[in-house]
Image 1 (cartoon, rainbow, N blue to C red):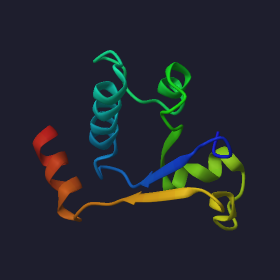
Image 2: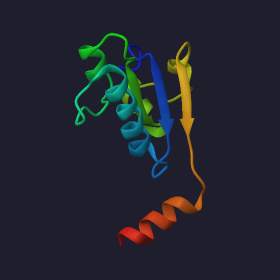
Image 3: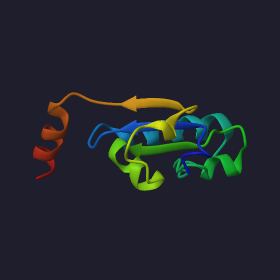
Image 4: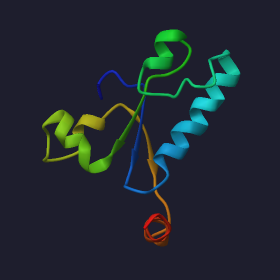
Amino acid sequence: MLQRADCVVVSYGKSGRTWLRVMISRFYQLRYGMPQDALLSFDNLHKRNGAIPKILFTHDNYIADITGNRADKADFRGKKIRVLASQAAVPWLSEQILT
């Protein structure tokens, strides 16, 4: 999957990855006339319209499970990478609100 991705969004837990996915999905819904319930999930929107990139969303620590490479980040070579991070207090705050 990583090798087929046009772009990779690498995040850490509770950094807003789902929120970002929803916002990007909404952009493509409006731009290309996708249904409102079409949520970006790697290549599902690309299959509907080839102009939409294949975007892989992953946590940094999960990529080794996909590639089997735990030594370095060589599997990311040649990919457009975006790192999503948030303030340290945000995970704590969201956990306090949810519990």
